[in-house]
Image (cartoon, rainbow, N blue to C red; front, side):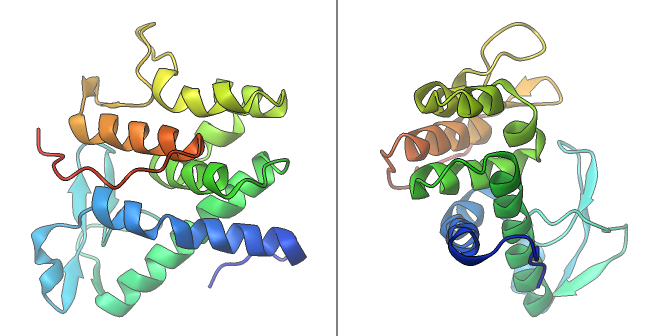
Length: 185
């Protein structure tokens, strides 16, 4: 398991809690390809992320033809969630609210470290403007100058990403709702 030795004591507990808390969102929003019912999962090309992927969103060191067992997929998921939670802690150490930590860990898991380390969301958090920080999850300005909140892949707005950003924003604001029942296009 990947655990940063610099995360200690109470901070470690916050990181671990955030990593665990995003499990249901990942299971919902990161459905693995249909072959996951088999004992071995095969890597697939994620055309939206332009990256080889295996299991439920794992991309680190994945190549064409790679396979993983369910046990490996479970390990990848935990490792990826811990890395995302550590990233939030490293870039936004002032945060202690479990809802903010959980939602931003899910955003970092799905979008990468830039969302919490080098964005307007980060700037708002550092300034102590936690309302605007959370709102950036749906209101961030995209490359086209429109507020898209990280809801596009390859220039196309996707319903699943819109719903995930709304879910994360509301969770960040302390209004966690049940996961939506339909994310089909």
